[in-house]
Image (tube, rainbow, N blue to C red; front, side):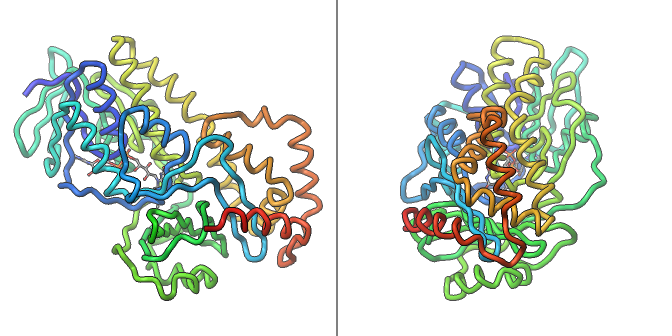
Length: 396
Ligand SMILES: Cc1cc2nc3c(=O)[nH]c(=O)nc-3n(C[C@H](O)[C@H](O)[C@H](O)COP(=O)(O)OP(=O)(O)OC[C@H]3O[C@@H](n4cnc5c(N)ncnc54)[C@H](O)[C@@H]3O)c2cc1C
């Protein structure tokens, strides 16, 4: 079959590309190796810019299949800081439900979807464009969109991958039947393990654990976070653990003749800022604009860098702080003292503001907060009171 756009990967980035393409009159085909329903290890927090992007695409996620959250709360022993989104809300939504909603929208727009249909081989053809061999026959298109995820084969085979030999970070997630106790994504930090607790429904939370090193069992990791384990002790487990990683995947560029990358395939640093889905949705829109205008793919590369700049900066900053326990507590203490600055960082992370906009005054308050933070083990008393008040007003 011949098509305008062959999209390999029917996750959020591939489906968003197909939806945008169909809305400008193109006829895309989406192939995914796995059958529906599609699940994946993910924290499942969609940040406000991602929620806005879904709504703009006309994607409807049933209210019963999601929970809203209004910020992020860090918990490191006795030190707690909470930041709120200044505009919009985030959604916690199970991966299976998110894909189901994207699939319905793509179907509404007449996109050809082939789930359970792996791409076996692809090659460039002399006349231009690409030819894909799939389980279901041949697909030919002027452009192949590699939306095949973190360990993208298309990225590697197109010569676009850049190897990374640094620390290996891994993640694993599981769901629990329990009423969410907070209207934030709660990040618990202890030792070398981080837990991201996201409300994903009226009676469910998702828990994603991340760490450096080799594969480990969910229960062993959770044991390192006794307060969280205690909270979940009586809750029924509603999904089997799913792992992912190593996270960091470098790219030289995001396009080559006949091929372009989107979503995690286009490069990835780490999930700890919860921006992967949002970035996939936003860059898919940028890609389709370039394709629809018939502009060179360099324009997409430029747009990608602009859209991902804050993600890379904020993620790199948090990756530098997270393993340094003393510094980490000092930073959380400083954010607890200055919740307005935490709110600003969330806005930067979501692409709605810049670090510059914090101004000298903001940086000054942050540094002051850092210097005056107590040593590890001591609760910052004044900020604890402030945080407790904020937490009370946000707990459900
Ligand atoms: C532990 C963890 C926690 C996370 N938490 C968050 C969070 O809270 N918020 C957030 O926004 N992001 C989070 N992320 C990141 C987020 O999950 C990804 O950024 C997002 O799923 C990327 O979407 P994608 O469409 O690029 O890739 P995927 O969702 O990985 O989809 C790729 C698809 O390609 C298909 N595929 C692969 N090879 C082939 C082939 N040869 N033929 C056909 N199909 C193929 C696969 O079956 C898959 O369905 C987290 C990630 C991890 C690992």
